[in-house]
Length: 148
Image (cartoon, rainbow, N blue to C red; front, side):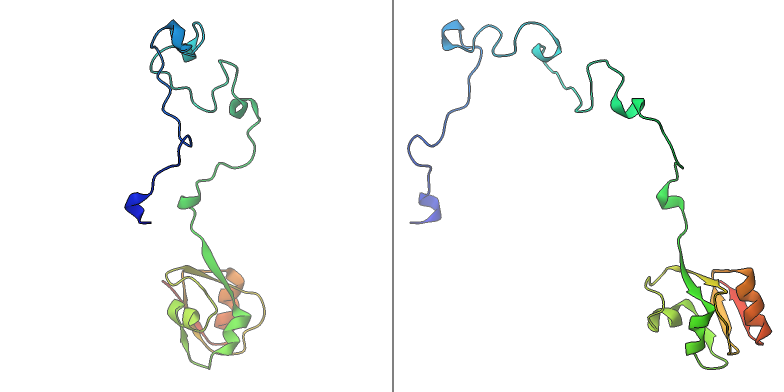
């Protein structure tokens, strides 16, 4: 048996319904659409959420919470300064260095440095955002920050 020899078995398929071919066919006159109404007309297309003129469910429910557009929000990857103790003294810490060390995940993500924990090393930290406590702790150890 070959693919070009395949065909459905006898009586397993049915021909398409041909409507509007006379009353004796059983599908004449209204052709199964019933009498009058929107669905009996030609060119009908009713959306799935349409409720026949009743106030739709989406409009009946109360709207709550912020309507924030997700793609406009800038998401930062958080790095606490206690994790920067893994690096050597005098190191310049860039987003690429953090990504190579496995501290951050996104390759082109924005970095925000937070002041959680203590910093014992003198480092130059580059980031997109810094919290006030992080700036104080980095500068108190003799390090510096650079906003990218």
